[in-house]
Length: 112
Length: 113
Figure 1 (cartoon, each protein chain N blue to C red):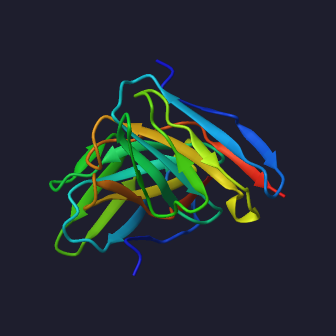
Figure 2 (cartoon, each protein chain N blue to C red):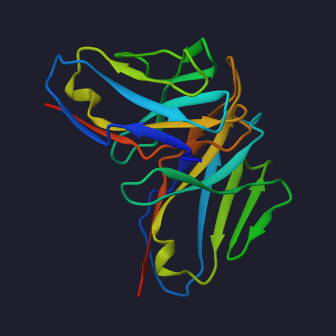
Figure 3 (cartoon, rainbow over the protein chains, first blue to last red):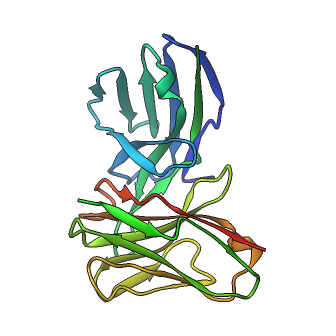
């Protein structure tokens, strides 16, 4: 089983739609969770951290379900500029330092 | 701040050649990382460093070497390039370990023919 699993998509949605991405992780001891955004041929950039209580940043809402080892990202009122690959990221424990494990990403294409 | 910078942006190598990918950060971060990203695949950790003089292997270290003589610089060395090393290489840094946001450089696209 992969440490972090995501639906690769693509998700093709019209402008203004609400879209949700899901991610599961295998290490129940993981403590830190993130969503990164990666535009085509660019580097990943942090979109938001994910907290146990859930958190919201404008049109974006992230939620964590530790019991099910499941993370979600909800995007409301999709914009053309939201088109990108969204990477689910979880910390991996052990070794000299904790490391981040990146999912393969979910591709979102917002259509006009 | 320039953040994380990488050079070159793009390089074509012949099989068996060697090269060094440069990475520098000006945020005084202790942790630095090298990843490779193949099409349709997640980022794979090659090597990482928790501070000057300290490096350790990641998930896919074979065929690569690193050094960390200063806090700012973390070069990645490819010896005897192989077609399997064709990839996009990203360098990243963070102030702390896995609990912290990582800041990425713009990447180096490497093609080995």
